[in-house]
Image 1 (cartoon, rainbow, N blue to C red):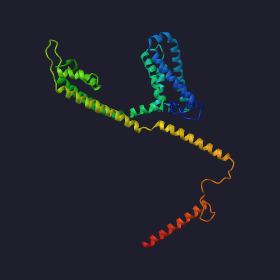
Image 2: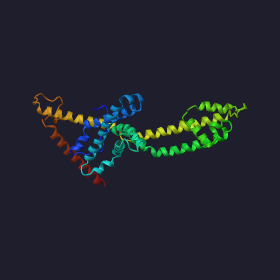
Image 3: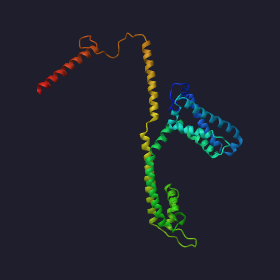
Image 4: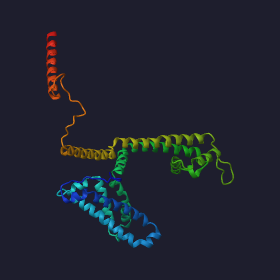
Length: 328
């Protein structure tokens, strides 16, 4: 049982390319290239490392891209005369798009796109590990519910932002001077960042530039912020978590299925070994530890006795049917 199960993908069988694509060694090499490419992207952002090892990083990066290209070619060739079936798998489309971005010319006008492709190579870990695919699948399944929850959350954010302008706009124009500024402020409150200080400023009032006292809201401010946090953070964010958990529970358990398959293969192998051992072992003359079923006082074996009992049961059923007909 491998520690890091690799994705099998939608790969056929029957030719040399398919055998290579399905082999554990090939998948391990591709997985190692993905991890190495992700590490190189991070190292290339460190100026000291880039200045000292820039040439080596570039050479290894070219080797990683070559492995990606070979992977795409092998997987397409695995479909034989139907190469278009490779693109029916969304994960294959993702891998193919990342590879195309990586092979763009270095001196082209799409330098930013090229950099985006190099960064996107790190995301290929998702397509290489089935468990990450399950999580991404759960998130994608949750998108419709996310949309409705987000719409409801935006409605609440908009309502409280308008209230904030009317309640605290004169006291704190920096945070509630306009609808747009108020929405940004309330979004920050939604993340629970610095909301206590903001609430105290509205409760006590902010003095003006000329030293005039601010407009204090000792009752409205606590009610405003506490209700917003209770509804926005405690309820809506928990709803989002609940939707994700529900989508995860609806997905098939890939890990359990894989482990069950390995256990089944192991059990089948053990059964075959036991059968082979029994067939090759010499016949034992010692009696079986389990007593055989015999008729009382006879040496009739159990199979003949069972046949006799079945015949008696059939006669009894026939007699019961006859009695029911006579009763009618």
